[in-house]
Structure formats: C-alpha cells, structure tokens
Length: 123
Image (cartoon, rainbow, N blue to C red; front, side):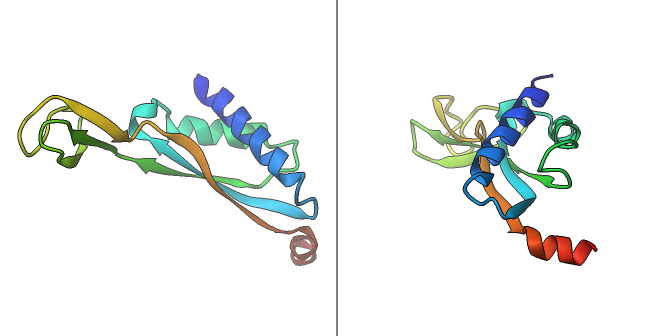
C-alpha cells in the first residue's frame, strides 16, 4: 500500500511548511492526484487521517482533486481527455500521443488558521 508512504510524505512536507508559521493550525491539505498515478484516494485519505492522530496536524482534512488524463496528438496536435485508457486521438485516431496531464501527484495548497482564533472558538 504505497498510499501510506505518500500520506507520510505529505505530512512531512506540511509539517516543514508549518515551521514557517508556528502560530497556525492546518485546516486542510489540498492535493492534485492524476488518474494515472495509481493512487487510491480513499486509501490515501485513510492513511493521512491515521498518521496525523498524534501530530500537530490532528483534525486536518485531506482534500483530493482528481486530474483526468489529457493527451496531445503528435500527428494533428489535438488535445483531448482520455477515458477508460483508450489511447488514441479523438480527432484523427492517431496513437502517437503525449501525456500532458493525469500522472501528477502534488500538494496544491495548505489551508491554515490562526491557533488563537481556533482555540477561542473550541473552548
């Protein structure tokens, strides 16, 4: 289950960023995950939620935006999204395609809030 190691890496990156903002709390981490990255979103969220329980990220949400596979045909330059991994150009039926999105996996943004405001609301 490589999703657990991905979740661990995401947590480490976010914690590193938090060092620059010590009086904040993470509300949410937004990821972009390409369809071709072979990541199971539910497993990644489960791993993230499990690993943050005893950390300063406890309570943060992991929000995943799935990125479809988009290709560019090298024959006719048409760009299109691929569904069900049928790798041919929709315009000319060519098979010489370049993947231009759909294999990415990265942190898009981190939503934070001031700890003092959060603690005041909770108590």
